Length: 75
Image 1 (cartoon, helix red, strand yellow):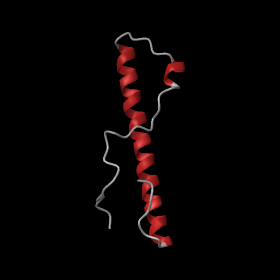
Image 2 (cartoon, helix red, strand yellow):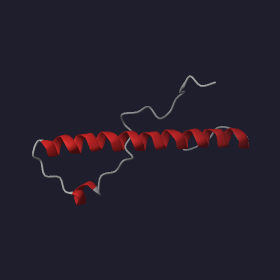
Image 3 (cartoon, helix red, strand yellow):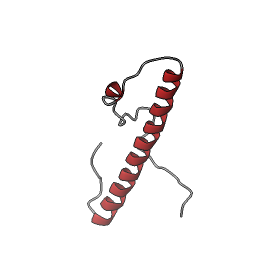
Image 4 (cartoon, rainbow, N blue to C red):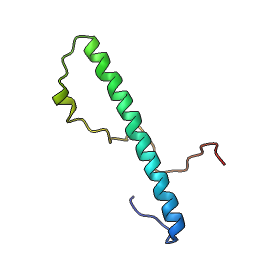
């Protein structure tokens, strides 16, 4: 919810770094998927202007679980 429960600087920085990594991954994933959708629509004859695409946000994340514990397999 935008708050860190602990007041220890090191832990806050660790969580902030992880949040940044997850946010960047979401932006990358959304960029790839939106590009795939636009290319598919254009191949079907749909006209999609680049001006229209400039108004699409890459930030939505309803398809993800942003809060929780993630295990990456890295130790």
